[in-house]
Length: 309
Image 1 (cartoon, rainbow, N blue to C red):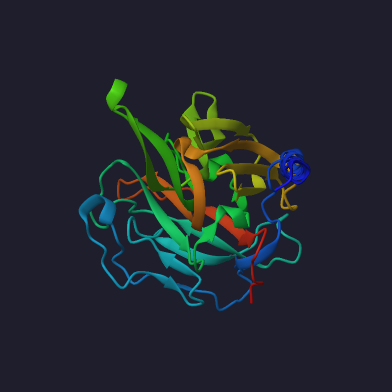
Image 2 (cartoon, helix red, strand yellow; image 1 turned 120 degrees about the vertical axis):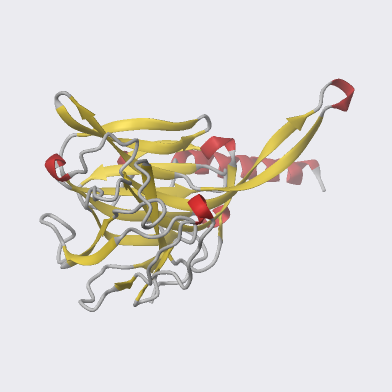
């Protein structure tokens, strides 16, 4: 290969890299939508098939597991689903024309029938087919309705709600020392996400967005001061980072809504397998969680996707 040709290739690669960097983080919702649910079908229903799973606590899966009639939602075999899942009339100021949203609440968030008195969580899984490389620029978006604070569970929990993705990543691990030092690559599944934290203070309730997570772990983002609708999303790029976006209202996300970009827990994200929701409560057998309402959850591929049917 001639020096001139080699130099041209180097300059071309550098130019592409600079262009990609200048563009900044991918805005969630970019590209082709390959999975979504708008809850507009009045026949939408979730079949719980209780008792639900609690494998994380007692190794019990309790098949067959919950499933929505449209087969797009399913129970987590790890923690089980929220105890109340219902198609719900969309609250005011939601997406224009939307008549249906999804209400989620939970009561027994650890082992069903065995109140623990501890903070617990349940999962509702979006059944997105396949696994997608970070090189395909996957992303996910949802609208979330914040109830007035007097309707929140009156428990000072670390978290009340979470929107999360399932990813596979890797990181370098150093071992030994001196002449015997060696490095290896460890791969692990993780679940980055955007959470809502609730605090009870002498002045009343406070709520914050929490990002899970950065290279060093979770961190608190901006305070939530007003009830109503918010749009949140995450995107994933070939450099192995997760990009977190938060916006008040139901408009599509923009570059201005970018909150943070990180390699969660220092893992370089290689692929994305899907997304899901967490609902938390104080598992005392009588305290229902805060009612959480979502609308139009969607999963996108910025490159190489097929349109959702």
